[in-house]
Length: 184
Image (tube, rainbow, N blue to C red; front, side):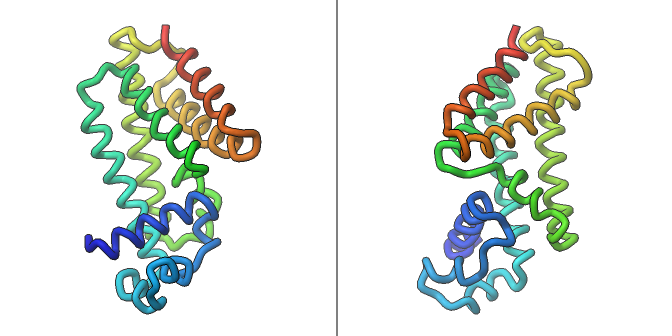
């Protein structure tokens, strides 16, 4: 990916997390780089192409992170996931998947598929990590690992939303409780 294209994807990611996908235009991407909208269209012919670029970039970052975390104990892997959310909380961002979920019904079908793929990537990894943590007696929970993964992800997403309204200490409280419920 060219440096210009990477900068556009990075800015679009930030705009999605702060405003939402439908609340920004190519003008919002072009102006900070002192370029015309046509330059953005050159790299991303349709806004869905830009959205897909953002999602694919995030999925690649997630794949890189889980590859780094793979040899760590499951408890630490989970803590690293929470740390990713903590950084977004302190930056005033919400979860990319959470933000795109609110616009989901208005997204192009190919972009919807990417959002689904991102959700499946995260839930697959998290449920696998939880199940392995339970086997290694590092994590304790009742029920199916996928159900616990869904609870963790929805709580982390909601914690970013609640932190916008009530302050970042809300994220700390929720994430601490998630870990306390899992770690024996």
